[in-house]
Image (cartoon, rainbow, N blue to C red; front, side):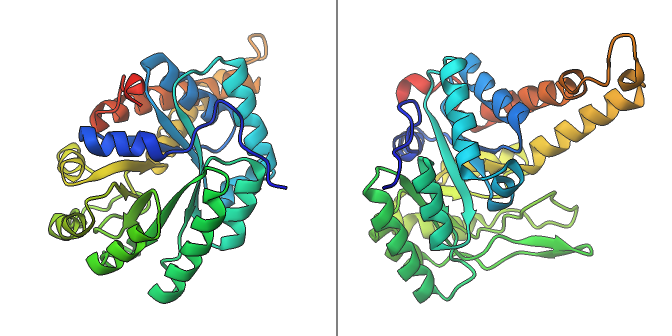
Length: 299
């Protein structure tokens, strides 16, 4: 029998739809370990901001499994007395089985990414996930089109989302929709052409529904704000926090602080603290950009 997520976790439907109505965007922040999760949750609480914390399938495996992630998150919500709305989300679930496994473990939201299938298969599998998830009050994100990427300096724009396909997905009962709009996973190279706002508007005009922007790391603030005005209500961030964490950790090591035997600079709690602080700082900047900072009471 699937477990129901803890009392403090919520699904992401209400927060994302409130953002859509209010013309701001919920920050979705991928987590990679305890420090990451603690930094995101404490920042959300301090700023009174609703938040989605997420794991890819790779991050779930790295951290030991879905049950470990759920246990860690629920424990932190309780012991840190987190009172702002928090959803735990599967990012880019590649199979129906992966989505179901996370729901059974206690995730409160899942993404089924069937964009690598034909639309017909994507639709059928998304429908199966929606029907399963709705039994347990879990929100579902679907994807059409594909998110672009960069290889050897050549930018792939990805397959832009189709408005008719978007409408069919929304009619299945999903909670929010990701679509290819010229966005890219990972760092944006100098020759990136920018977001496809015309296509975003066409999709939004067809569905009048909250949309998700993947590859939120590195998109200029002006484009972020324009995307939000056109219906983007959830923005995914991973690389930006990873780079901030990496830079701060490297700077700490380059000072030689980790070799201080007297002050025990090698202690992981000290070694990882600069990265923790960097996440807090970067996340605070991003939620300000997204317009969601301080919006917890509106959910």
